[in-house]
Amino acid sequence: MSLDMDMSEFHAIFFEEAAEHLASLEALLVGLDRMNPDSEALNAIFRAAHSIKGSSATFGFPDMAAVTHDLETLLDRVRKQELVLTEVMVDITLEARDVLLLQLAAHQGGEPVAQALIDDLCERVRALAHGEAGPVSTPAPAPDAACDKPATAVRSADDGANAAVAEEAAPRALRKKPAFFCNMPAPDQAAPAVTQAAAEVPEPRPAAPAGQPVAQPAPARAAAPVRSLESSSIRVSVEKVDQLINLVGELVITQSMLAQTAQSGLAGDSLDDERLYERLQQLERNTRELQESVMSIRMLPVSAVFNRFPRLVRDLAGKLDKQIELRTFGEATELDRGVIEKITDPLTHLVRNSVDHGIESPAEREQAGKPAKGVLTLSAYHQGGSVIIQIQDDGKGLDRERILAKARERGLPVSESPADQEVWNLIFAPGFSTAEAVTDVSGRGVGMDVVRRNIESLGGRVDIASQRGQGTTISIRLPLTLAIMDGMSVGIGDQTYIVPLTAIIESLRPQAADVKALVGHDGSKGRLVHVRGEYLPLVALHEVFALTPKTDRPEKGILIIVDTESGRAALFVDELLGQRQVVIKSLESNYRKVPGISAATIMGDGSVSMILDVSEAVRLGRRHGLASYPMACAV
Image (cartoon, rainbow, N blue to C red):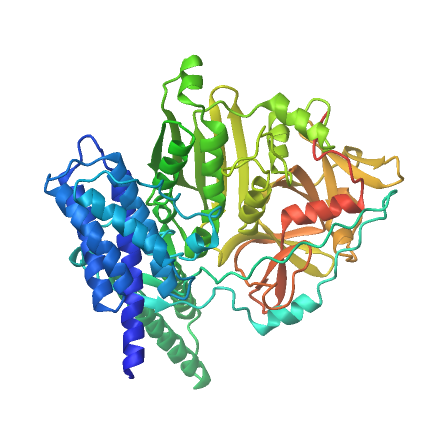
């Protein structure tokens, strides 16, 4: 092994540990009581800086060593009570942490940090360390989706992907739990059969021509190329690796037992059906346990995301002259690493919205009879086979009338007496914003539609509940993993499709009298079905995917009532084939994106089935019928 290879491996470990130290330093600083600082916390902050200084000097990163040397001097005097901790010191330490983060990114191939920025920071840190109150610039907000490119160049330092952010920063503490570094392949390496089957999927029929031609939007300007922020390495505890080895051993034993049974049959011995069945059951158990063990390796606690928000809330609240307390619950709830990486930006946007638009200023809160300090709560918990993440504030709530006025002003379709949920869903329209002024925090209306789109791309959904004067709760339902899902197999003609179970409310066979045909002013046609006091739009999937059904009469087939971003709808299929757990295979990366289809899976008989994108399939179905009929209307 060459020296360069050896050093590259050491550098990778340094980058990983430095990111952990910086995340720990930030978390400790934000949680510090300035009036009565905890001595253990001060010592841990000092040790984090000291560890980075020593490691960076050892591995040849003198720029980082210089910054942490000056910072260490300041922190040492504070922990020895030679200096009284001030807000200015906390701010400049956070600023130093941000600069170190940028330096770390630069050494991993990011943009270099301006030397003038480093020199200015070190000069101000030294001034504070010697008891001089030098000018201190406001620390940059914690890196998030809205920050400039240099601040977003480092992923591992901010998204907590190593699941050890809150641990003590000292190297010895970091090494108390042995761990392996593993390079994990992408979970969507599909079999060639998926690509072949995808080519045979009928394209959705084009929508019926509308009365007026639709103007073509201007081509979007290409985004600047950005280096991938996703890391291919994860930390795995020794216990999980040992469990994996044991399960593989059990699988080998079961395979040997089955092979022996098969050989006995080939030799002419009579096969014991009961023994064969028992061994097949054992194989099924081993396979299931192995699957669960492998999936657990990719699981990370949501604290990996939550840990970035104390700093963000602190900075934004200070910038907006608000007093906000952040509370977090359920940080140990685990999600697939792929989900964790993709929900960071949507959650960041929602937190920023709550701080900016949701929670009032101290004066407004006191005038409304509330405590001056607002409360923002982040929580996560399991519900069924999903994880629910909630962002809740005790602010002023959504302004129903203002949202409706803005929607009508923009020409969005709104019914005469919309339910609250329909009104709240309007804020997910592209470019929608009720902000009176555009600020550098928010107000451009370029976020909530992206939030919903990103969450739905993960197979999740977003719900809003709000009460005027009491606050707003945004609930995000997410799958535990991106690799496996529970679905319902449905038959449409001679094809089998999978409908995600999380989208299904119920299934039924309607009476002929419950199905109503409608004709629009432009001659377009559609159907509604009466279900439990509501008329729901009926979407015939055989029409969407240009298939030949076994029946085109809803009363002879099955209707699956689904919940989508726009409300409920009824999917018309020929038959239900049964509920099953399926392995998700990426379609887009192996073939191309097919409208109405989110992914594919390989069935037990080797055939390939398409997994339905329920929301998009409903939208496609509406385009084939009445373009403006409501998603659900009361009788």
